[in-house]
Length: 150
Image (cartoon, rainbow, N blue to C red; front, side, top):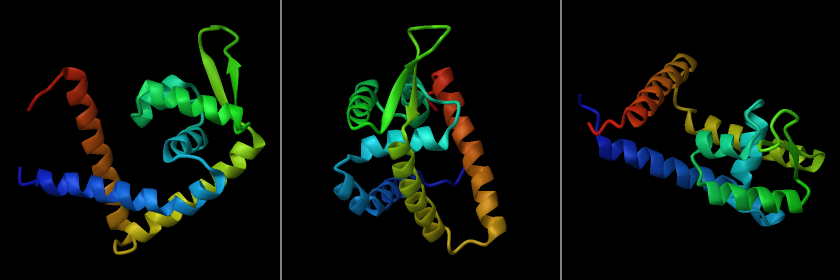
């Protein structure tokens, strides 16, 4: 297949840099790190996935990083921890009103960021890109589960 791995890696790297820069003002104003913002936005954007384990597995952050972020966010009263009623080992994370307000600010930045990046695509192109991205992601996840090295 004629996909250039260097280009794919560059896209990922450039997107991370661009995306992170869009949050500079909000992070400076709140005193949060991008990692902490990732946790807030994950909880806001993925209802039903509300444990530190979910954040770790689905967002791809290290367990120690998520734990530290959750501790700080709970300390700052941006989220609260709630033990699961059926399994006390499971702790659900819920954004407080202040955390939800912060998430809404972050979601506006996310939306503006993506709108700017995809401004050169038509709606059908953007939809097709999303479909292809899902296929590539599914394939990558399957390869990781199978332990593939090709």
